[in-house]
View (tube, rainbow, N blue to C red):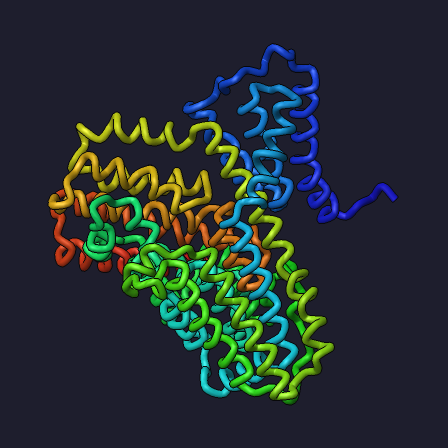
Length: 543
């Protein structure tokens, strides 16, 4: 009875550690003096404001339990905000954190989009469209490299929005990569690395609109386009992905997952998918068009939805409508229209019955529950850091150091943006902090100012790419149906490699702010680094 297996003991320990920590924290607050509650937190705009996300991220990586880790981080944020008052912690965590995050209209729109897309994925599986596409792809894509390059290409083509990118690419490419024995961890990385990194260099995207909104005098889109060649992290990540796909090289934890998939056919390496609801027996009536048409309708409907939210049908130009678009509203409306059209199309095709289609609604919602739960906790954790003045703390640091290090400022801003985005899990919030500061130091006509703005964007995307509490990272796990912590731990070495080469390239750009000079140097450094890592992996395998 008492002789538990080692695996069981380790799993129990992973669950108990954050629970015991949470109980200890609540016990301390229960005995905290009532005088501790003050109007303003003693920890406001101090380094302690970054403690909640640091604790959440560390616990998630150590215990592999993402839900409890995020909740502990939220509670720590509530404790610091209320100065260890029990009542203040309780109300701030639930009223101002979890409930407020769920009630936020933008967040609700994203959740509706997520559920709608989950329903569409279930419908496409039941109709046999995904299986038919998998059969077609296996006949035309003969290698693992081809499957990976096809995933990258689709990710690059769907550049409108990162949420849309993650879930669409995942639902389309899962059958293809499964047939090619590519691990779900690798698929999640390819999806994540073609989401935010591609959106941040696409002038017609929700990300371009977000960045443009932080620049006055209507010059936002112009500045965004000028900054694209200097967005080294995004561009070098694409170079890195192609190198990995073509050479078949992998390193770090990803190497084990890819080896298991290739040699044993175990695409999960023993881990569970984020959801098993999408696993259906193939419908023999399904055709490739049953997958392609709904996805095409979804893309068109979401584009129309986004420009509608930006006032296109009220006289705004296409570019202006995209700049002013609300991604939450556009994606929600677009996905809803696409779902109705998909229902009608499948009824006409008679590939599945009306009863099966209605049954897909709760199944689709259930398949997205893990992603919704993680997103809700991540948004609540962001609310905690915002209430503690984390943004203002970082802003003060940047402003204080901007004057004396102008040559190294691109690299410094890049690293600060990485840290801030990683800790808070938000790229757009990082843009909002650092871009106005950068523009206050450099005029728009200064080439170094363009480099620094690009460093803000690149660092924000890098931190977002690495962070387990980033909504884009969570969406990539959901799109690939991959265990979330597995995705984060396997992706981290790749993201850190691209970040290190990007930081060196930004140092060079501080001395020579010319894209046609610095970008080729960065690409050469990236490829050279990959060859060195490949040689080290071969030497390690030979030992």
